[in-house]
Structures are given as structure tokens and as C-alpha cells.
Amino acid sequence: MKQSINILISGGGTGGHIYPAIAIANEIKLRYPEANILFVGAKDKMEMEKVPQAGYEIEGLWISGIQRKLTRKNASFPFKLIDSLWKARRIIRRFKPDIAIGTGGFASGPTLIMANRRKIPTLIQEQNSFPGITNRLLGKRVQKICVAYDNLERFFPGNKIIKTGNPVRQDLLTIHSKLQAATDFYQLDKSKKTLLVLGGSLGARKINQLVEDNLTFFEKQNIEVIWQCGKLYFDEYKKYNNHKNVQVHAFLNKMDLAYATADFIVSRAGASSVSELCIVGKPVIFIPSPNVAEDHQTKNAKFIVDKHAALMVKESELETFSVVFESLLKDIGKQQSLSENINELALPSATKDIVDEVEKLINPS
Image (cartoon, rainbow, N blue to C red; front, side, top):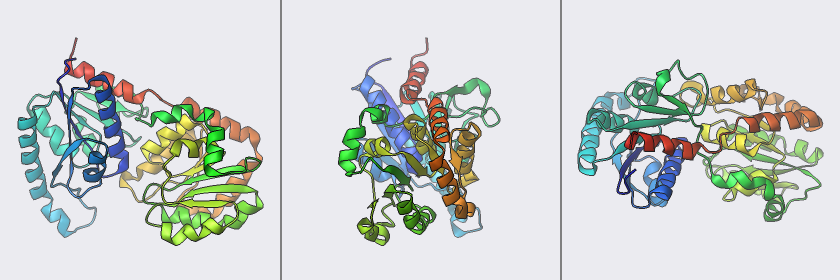
């Protein structure tokens, strides 16, 4: 592949679309330091902040999704779409990309549609077991579709699908050698079991309430808790840093060390989180968010649960959590089988495999 390539990447709205896009960009830069990479996102969405922080340029489109209820925002959607298509066309004519890559989110729709019209190779990366509407629409047009789950032929043309997995942090591949460093960093007593609670960067109210309600239970079970409550809830829950065996964090900047020291993990079931947890290989209880498009977190979690590789407690059934957790705590064999089964689902070379497909499209042999 030529060195001075132009790569257009579009994806955003949530971290689950943004971080895979950045990981792909980083791998391309690693292989081709002279490559020019430009991101296209949606104005006022988190990618407009996160992408520049990662060192890449980004341009914003005036685009948003269609609300499920009748709202004024829906009335403006056709105008936003037309405006975004025209701006995407201008960006493409100016930047002259060798390929356009979409990782989901509203901005990737207009961007890849216009790239496709100009006969530019296109590739999408679908993180979830149930694709979002943008990627479902794009699947008919693009050349390659990189996926993380099986049985997506019901959504996409089978001849375009490549199972690569989702990009993950590379420092997770070596967590099993970091136990002592992790114990020291989090100042834990390793004679006790450690529960890691993950609610996402913003936080999850129901999970935070669940942990608060079970602090006495965890103490009786001699469990230490690393509780990532999210920046929206930190002021509300930081008081529990004075509670025995509990530490509350808005963020976990050393995620590899948090994973390394965990004996059990409670987590949402976003696509990126699920992919990371497969590599981490610890017993997991998923509590999927029911407030996402197409309920895809429940579908992601169910895929893992059906492989006997994790447990799931729905938000509507949180009163059963303590029973489920205590049962797992007492069953060493169950812990081991969950760890082994989830680790077998890991696809640690996902980013490299996706960029291999990018190379094939730019330089077909």
C-alpha cells in the first residue's frame, strides 16, 4: 500500500463507536506514519472532543438520529440529512480519500454514502450482535463489513462479512502479569476477593443504586469493591470512600490494573466492554442497559451467556443480584468455567485484522 494515503474515518455518538475508530486510526498510523487521517463526526457529540484528544483532525456534520416519538427534532431531520450529505460531499472532494471507514453512528451514514457514490472503497466495522440502523443501511453499499459476532448474515450480505472482533486496548493482553502492580496501585488486601463494578464513563444509575444497596452484603462476604460510578454520579457516591472495603472512582485511568486485580466483574454490555471482558477472562455478571437502540446490550450479553461464558441480571430483576452473586462466590468450578469460556471468545488481533482488510481494499492484488 502506498505511504501517502488519505484515510477518512467516520463514527461517533458514543464511546462504543469512537474508540474503535481511533484504534483503527492508530494501527494505520503505526503501519503508515505518513498517512493522512481525517475523521468526520456529528456536531455537538463526544467525538468532537475525543478525536482531537487522540491527535486527529475531525470535521462535524449537522446530523442526528430520528426520535422514536413525534418531536420537533424529527421535523428537522430531512434538512439535517441533506445538509450533511452536501458537506460530506465537499469533504470528500477536498480530501480525496483512498478509503472511507465507518464504525457506526449517525455521521457515518452520509459520509459513506457520498464516498460510495464517488466509487471510493468503503468498509464498516459493526461492534454489536444486533447492528444499528446506520450500519444496516450501509451494509448493502459497502465492500467489506468487519463484525464481532456470528450469524449476522440476516442483516448483511454474507459475502461481505469478515469476523474480526472489536478493537480493544492492547495493554489488556498482559494483565495476568500485572497482579502485584495492580494490588499495590489500588492498595488492596489480596486475602480478600475483589469485585470490579463498571457502569461506563458517564455512569449507570441503576448499577450505582445496586452497589449502594449491597455494601453491607459485600462487607459480610469479605469482598473489596472497586466501584467506577461515572462522572455524573461521583459527587453523590464519593462519600462511600470512607466505607470499609470500598473505593469509589469517577474514572478508572488504569483499566488494565483494575481488570488485573478483579476476581469478579459487574458490567454493562456495550460492545467494546464485552470484547475487553472476553480478553480479560474473569467471571462476569452483565447488567445490560435497556435504554439503548434496539436493546443491543441485552443481545450482546445474551450471546455470551448462551455460550455459558457469563451471567446476566436484567435491570428489571436486580432484586435477584445478591442471590446470583453469592451463588457464584461459593462455586469455584462455576467461576473457572465462566473464565475459560469467555476467554475462548476473545479476538485479540481485531484491530490488526481490520486494517488488513483496509489494505486489501486500497491495494487489491
